Image (cartoon, rainbow, N blue to C red; front, side, top):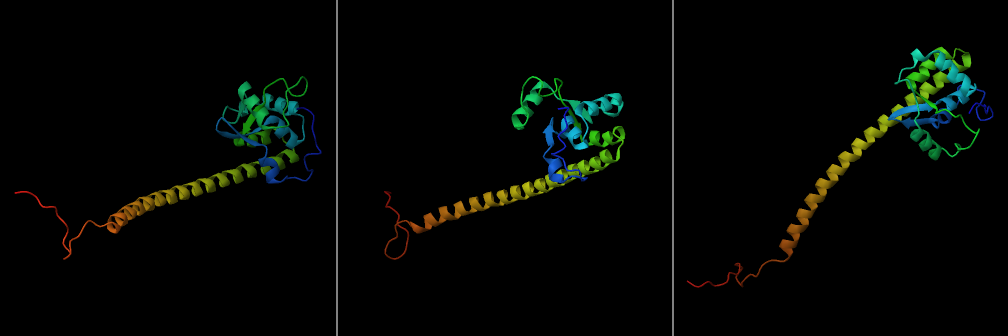
Length: 186
């Protein structure tokens, strides 16, 4: 995607966090942004962004940036309606995915005011997503605790119901209040 669609990106920096968050994906259990999305945000061609990265490859180890394999590329195409297969529509090379650290490193490679401001906005979006994930984990723990309490209450109620059934159907009692015992032969 070397063409820039500047109509989609506001000229006012930084852009809204939601605009950026929609471009963050989880690939290989890491939150990442694709090179084409970053190029669009920085308003440079994807090819130029990748050239700048390749000139400074030592700054981008595997935990900062990695190239998608074919299965990951196909998976993203199925998730994102705008990605279509076809000759000349998209790059013949697999996309690069940048983690939060790789995006921070991009600010040293792309040294313009716009790039710096965009990096700040992107890093803030990553931080916001991490905070939301922590809140989700906290809620998940509370739900698990409530479920455990509910399971305990269910067990107690089942015992109470069982005991009530026993009490509501008493055994035979004779006239003076003693329990009925069948006569046995001696």
